[in-house]
Length: 115
Image (cartoon, rainbow, N blue to C red; front, top):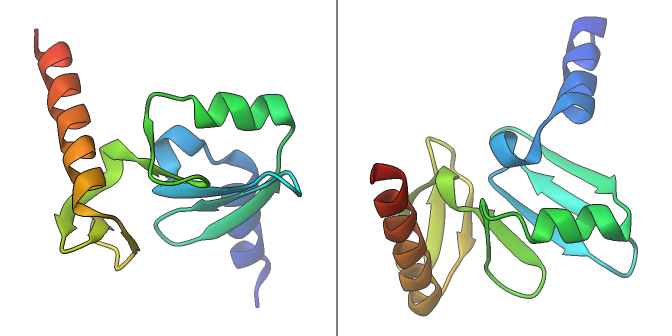
């Protein structure tokens, strides 16, 4: 492995911005870890309680279940009981009810930004 690959990985880890780079994240409150899932990577970071709370309350993310939040703006399509992201093969399970809630959220935010 050459150093350029290691440097590039390190930059993704240190410089990534959850709002723009993350497809979804999962929170493990008991250990303070957050697993960020991006297009080509999964990163685990230890965050303080304040940092986790700020992230979990960010309007860009929709709470899918008790510990999983999806970046609504990164969803490319919804299939039978799953959410898919962009041109990746990353997908996570999602009930029809939650899919409808996300669609409502996206359509209301589109109306707000379009007005």
